[in-house]
Length: 170
Ligand code: MG
Image (cartoon, rainbow, N blue to C red; front, top):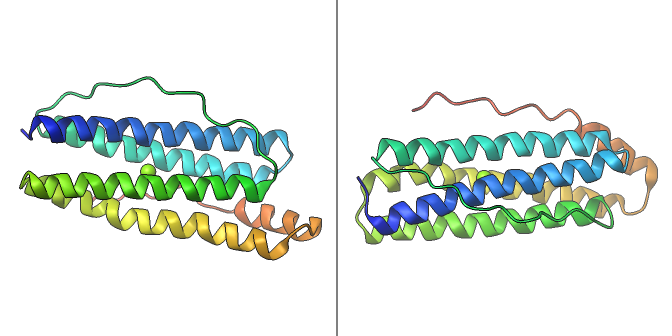
């Protein structure tokens, strides 16, 4: 069983991860409405990843003898100006999640909770990838600018994104 403070912080992270899923689903809905099926597909894969992250925290809380307590989820952003605007918002969001994970890790260090430190390592590495994935798309969209043909090519390319492979490390 971990400390009350860590239990609360892990519960908060269940909320943050599921809220992320909801935000990416909203971004997918924007892209589907705007006729960018590839960008929408990319966001739906991202949604799946966030649901998987949610369950990693959910399972860990249970393994440590805690109880998951779900919190209300607010209205996600629904209107955007452009694909670049959406991916910039996704990158900013991932940076916020990285800060959350780092704060959780600092708390696990303070509380000398070694299993939590070990558990959080995966997320520290994962956040490096998450920021890189969103950052790469932002860089590509900045490069192509307003060229409609290039934006459509990028939409097709992102439509090839594969669903996450579940690692069986646990
Ligand atoms: Mg996540």
